Amino acid sequence: QLFSGDIATIHGRNGSGKTTLLSMLSTLTLPDKGHLRYCRDGLAINDDLISRTIGYMSHKTFLYQSLTVLENLEFFAELYSIRDVKLVIEEKSRVLNVQDQLHKRVTTLSHGQRKRISIIRSLLHSPAILIMDEPETGLDQESVSLLRNFIISFAETGGIAVIASHTSEVDYGEDQKRYHISNGRLLKGS
Image (cartoon, rainbow, N blue to C red; front, side, top):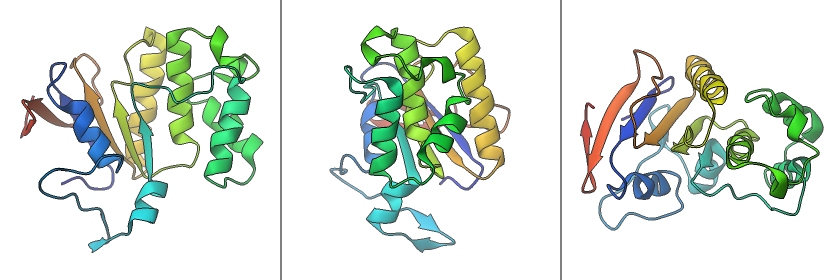
């Protein structure tokens, strides 16, 4: 169980089931067995509210290569019916310091830059739950530090962050809940 303000990290080797678990948590995949339950104030919430509550960042960036970063972010903001799109994009772009990338075409960006934009894309609708699949992979040390600080402040303001990683190098604070996944089994502790 995770509650408002929690950061959960899930560690495991490649192929252990991290991505599958996150895909189920983000409602993109249905579990073969068992069930997931999302609650607010002790009451189950409906699927539509769940999708608006979750910000999901996967291995794939889900960015249109021929568009600029700004055009991509505007497109995704439109999908979420975000008001004041320019203001929201400007605000979220500061999280990982990508303001200078906004007018560049995605095809011209490095892998790490695309990853940072993908993280910003997952934040546009100000989700209450962030689900991130190896967000630190491909990021330089400055970006990892910015991401870490953002995740900690996100949780401090009541958000829930679930972060899968094949490494335990990035520390999200002493209060993070650590899980290990092996052969599809999730165990508490690192």
